[in-house]
Image (tube, rainbow, N blue to C red):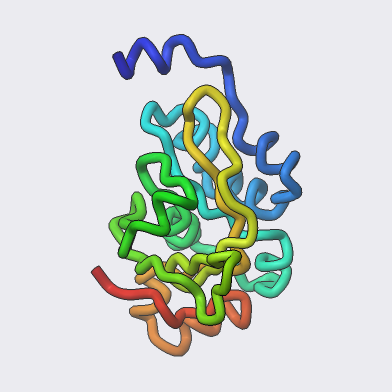
Length: 173
C-alpha cells in the first residue's frame, strides 16, 4: 500500500513549500546538503520536520559547517520519521531523528495556556503545517539544533554554531 500511495502522489518540492512559508535559509541549506530532492521530496514515509526560522540561521552568520557530511548531520537532527502533530508531541517524552539523535520533548518554562513545546534545544513557534499528500508535518522552531558530532568536538565544535544554537536540552542517546 505504501508503494501505491507514493506512486499516486503529485510531484513535490520541499524547497518551494518551505520558501512559501518564509523558510528560505532552511530550504537553501537543505538543497546545499542534497537533502531535498534526494530525501525529503521522495521519502515514502511521512516526516516531521522541525524547520529553523530564517532568524535562527541569521544568528549563525556564516558559521554553518563547510564539511558536507557534518552539514547533513546538522540538518538531519531536524527530521523525524512519522508525522507528529503538536498534540502528539505533547504526549511524547522524546523523539529520535533520522540521524538517531534523541531530543527530549517538554513544555518550555512558563509555557502557560499556549503550551509552548521545546524539542531538544528548540522551541516550537508555529505548529502543524501539513505537507501535501500525507507527506508529514512541519513545525517551525526558533533555533538550529545541534548535532552530536559538533557536541563531541567540544568547545571548538560549538563555536561553529555560535549563538544560533542553544545546546542545552540536547541529550545523547
